Image 1 (spheres, rainbow, N blue to C red):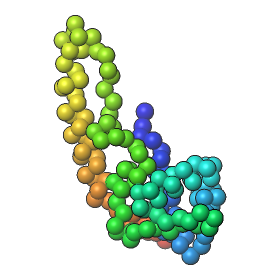
Image 2 (image 1 turned 180 degrees about the vertical axis):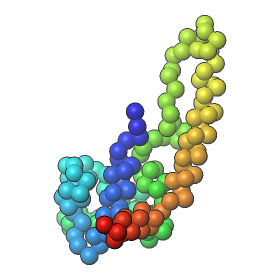
Image 3 (image 1 turned 120 degrees about the vertical axis):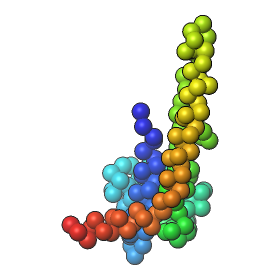
Length: 144
């Protein structure tokens, strides 16, 4: 099981909006790059707009970033596309057997580790900006 692909697609959308800022970045255009249905893109764009990361206007094709590249972190995208609730990245099974010593204690024991792991991942996501992603793609494209 993995984190929803909405996170990666959200980053993809924002990056392409930036790299195509001279053109019209419609949901159809984005869907072609992501290789998905434009309705999926529109749903994610709604989430990104609600989070204040993009500007879109009904009836007008295209989108633009609402903030500077260095002001948008991967954590912002992660939160915008509702990957997980606070401290719920890892699920803990709900009904272990209380008659078993492991079953009785497993939830309390691993919950602390899971919370620490999620916080560490989120710290990394806060340190990476959309500018880092755009620069890396630009570098790779220039070396091909």
